[in-house]
Every structure is written in structure tokens, then in C-alpha cells.
Image (cartoon, rainbow, N blue to C red; front, side, top):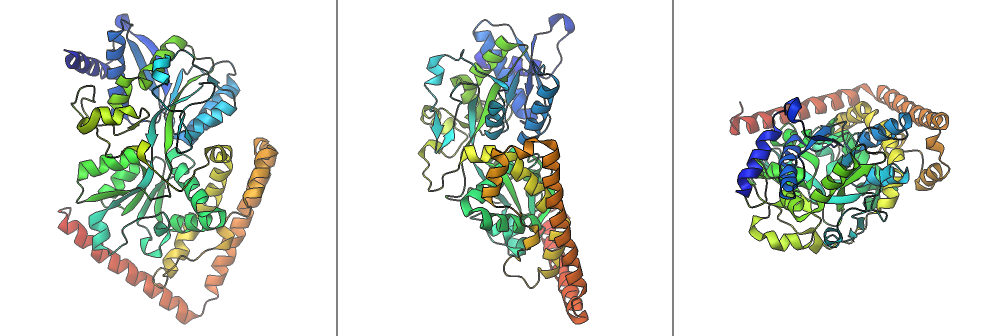
Length: 475
């Protein structure tokens, strides 16, 4: 009977209620995919019905990934300091919540029963799972890894990924998909992980090589698994839920997902009530549901199991350690993050504070300058065995200067920030101009050789790709 009621709730969620029967609204800003929102909407109202609460109509607002959410929410509060009209922020990682907490834009929630709070540890491997003032809570956990097309990698004789560094290999030119870190929180965290794990200097060199190999920077991380699955690219940066779902759909013989050992972090995916939420009580109930055993089971259980999703598995790691043992074979997650050990310690506080600076540097030196990086990579791809580092396309500041920019609040002043960005762009443009002039000054025989090598590389790739698609039945 409970499953039947849950199914009825799900069916109702797909249709608009007549005005006379309209439920109480709750405005939720969230980057989560539609299938997850639909499952949560149905399960939430089933949970409410069991507790004799009125139905709550979840109205989702999608403005992009975690980076876009920070910009949007901050901008809305600048225009409407008391209330933006939005009740809840759900999803986008941990960093957006830490940043909005620093701006005092979140409303502490003390309504969560202690029985629920006691189920959830304060942190995991250095990753905070809630704010000290309870202004935000982690609802699920995310790990970060590399999704790859096994058949394409085998056919093109490309390396099987085991670390982030391999993605800077010149062999991988045009074979990488990546979401723009300025828009996608998960992509931004991966870039930050690389900077922390390898160090500032080597980290930026690896990121430059990866950017040179990237076919296109997409606006959403949800596009990456699709591009890898259809063979548009061979590798993509994804969070664990996207990777595991893609492997499940395509089969382990076609796709693989790797979490680089000692080179990744666990990050909470948060929920918070915004300051001035117009539907505060409904917001409290939604947060309580997400943290409850019922909400946590929905995120992690297999489709069709008791308390699990009805139409599609969500593959999100729970923040309740006991639930992994409790679900056992009904668990859709093959790993227990609370049993992980790692030698890498990700500094969330540092990452959150320098979020905007890192995005600015990535945007100017790796994305705005990506066409030139790709041009250099293509010209030398046939002769390269190691990535060629272009100094002019590395950030002209070190970590000490980044810290100064943050502590002196320089980037919060529009005029000073613009001056800094103009200087960085000028340095990059100058390096690009010199690089093109250097290419023009090469001897004619070398230009002919490089052009011939480039054309040969493209032809060999075309032959291999054609063979792959014929074998896959796509041609």
C-alpha cells in the first residue's frame, strides 16, 4: 500500500494541480537533474502524508551549476536584501554553501530533530557535513573521477586513466570533455583538487595540458557522460553519480569509471534555507525529509526496492554511515565512503575562499585562450611525448598573491578587480601574439613537416574512429 501511495504521488508530480487544489509552494533553487527532482518530489509528499502534513508543491528553479548559483543568489540579495523570494538551495556541492554562509545569506535551521542529526557525522575525511550554526547540511556525498569509453580507448590505443595527470598527455588531444568550471561546481572542484594534490606550479601545468586536449568546455557537467558514451570523446570529468549511472546504462564492457587513488576528495552536496525564506516552515520540513532515513534511502537504494526510487536510480552516497550496512544488496552504490582511507587532504576552507580567483584564472588562461592552446597542441602533437608548457598561459601570480587578493578584498571592489583581470588578459594576449610570431619565423621546411604531421595525425584518427563506429553499428 505504501508503494502504491508513493507511485500515486509520483504520477501527480508530473501534472499541474488545478488552481482550486493547489498545494503550498516551496521555491527550491537546484542544479539537480529532472529525474532526481521528480523522485524526490513524489517521495517527499509521501513522507508528508505519513505525518499528516499538507502536500507541498516543490517548484524548482535552475540557474546552472554551483558557480552560477553563487552569482545568482548573491546578485538577488544585492537587489533584495531581505528576501529573494527563494526558500531553499539544494545541490551544487559544499563550496557554494560555505561562500553563502560567509555572506550571511543562509538561515540557521534548528528544527531538525536530534535523532536525525545524531545519525550524521560532523565531517568525513576533512569534508564538513554541516555548518556549526546549522545554516547548511550535506544531503549526500560526491567523489570525483574520470569516465572513459573503453572501446574507444582500446581502438585508438589510448591510455587507461589512473590519475588526473594522464589527461595532459598529448595523445589525448581533442579526446577530453569538460564542463566550464566557472559554471559547474563539480568541474571547479576537480580543477581545485589538481591544484592542491600536485601543488600550484605543477597543478597549473597539468591543467594547461588538459585544457589543450579538451574538445569543448560545455556549460553543464550533465553533458559529459553523454559525450563519452556515444564516442564523441574518450574521457570526461564527472562526479561519481554521473559516472556510475553512465556505466550502468552502457555496460561495464563499454564504459569505465575511475576515482584517482589519493588524488580525489569527498564533498558534501548541501541543502540550506535562504535568509528571508517566504515559506520557512515548509522549507524546514523539506530539509528534515532530505536528512531523514526515508530521504537518504531514496538517494541510495536500487530502483524498485522498499523506499527506493520508482523510475530511475539516483546513485547518490548517503551521509548516514549505518545506512550502507542496512541496505546491503539493495544499495545501488558499490562503495562505502566511510571506509575510505587516503593520504590526500583536501582543504575545503582554502578552496571556498579562493573560488572566484581560481575561476577568473581558469577563464582567462585556459578557456578564453583555449583556441591558441589547441593550435599549439595540434601543431606539435605528432612529435610530442610530453606536454609542452606555455609559460605565458600560466597564471602570473602565486598562491601568496592569491591569498593577498582575498585578504585585502581586492576582488570585491569592481574597479580593482577589473584592473587585475585586464592585466591578466593583457599578459595572455601578449604571449599569444609572440607565440604566433614565433610560428611564422620557423623555417619553411619545418612548417611543411609540422603541417604534414598534423594532417597525418588527423587522417589516422579518422581511420580509427571510422572503424570504431562501424564496429559499434553506428555507421
